[in-house]
Length: 346
Image (cartoon, rainbow, N blue to C red):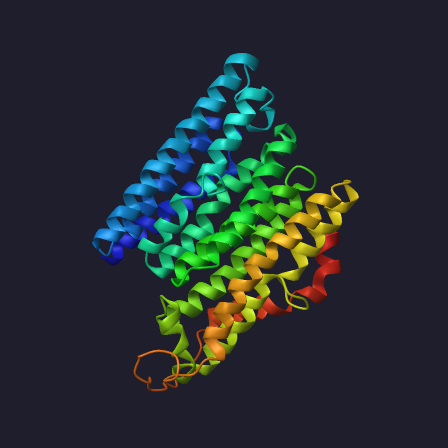
């Protein structure tokens, strides 16, 4: 892709995100979401492969539908209450429509079917943007309207997302699809706590984005797209494979790594809100996700060719680990001791 074109698209992504997260008016928030959608489409379809074009088409149709519902929800609210302010979404029907629209934008169950397919058709770096940066504006809209949303509906969507994200990721061999189902599962954890402790949703999102960025950048550096290639990666890049192992275990939420922190705080808060059954259910369902993270980690570090696949043994390269991967991985595995400080901030 032309560097000038890429610069324009990345700048548009930043602009769209900034407009949405800093707006008070629904029309401005909708404008930012539309700019984001249009800016990411060329990045998805830049390879001109039929699968990439299909992914871009699916993404456009889903996001256009969701944006229409956001606009419809805000107009209905303005019709009944005279308010265009994002925080004043008081009409029950409007809040239900908005929840459906944002769930569609994020990929929460039952509106999740597009996300694995789109991620599978995108390059790894575009997949990283779709999994992290593109989810930030919708989450900020949920954060701003959290007082008006329906707790039962959000809890149901959250539990279903954690269940489906874990269940459907079990049988995958494509790394990008596994990361898509991982994202759906993490979004469930964010959605369940949104009404009771919105700042915890944002903290969970920041930590999730950091760990996912570390995983995607490592996979991109190793040029890995499926499990059979990942099995041969240890001989080629042992340092990166070790980094990947630790980051995946952190994403799974195992102590004493960073990923354990948001799960611990969310379970604690749910228990305080007399929602112990919900906490138990999502904790048990996250074991499904733990299985496929362990499977990825096993493929990355424990299996050695040529016993497992027909791939030729790779030459080991002494290419240094990129500083961004090093910094993100360090944060992804070592932030748990700072939890008292983080809890005082939020």
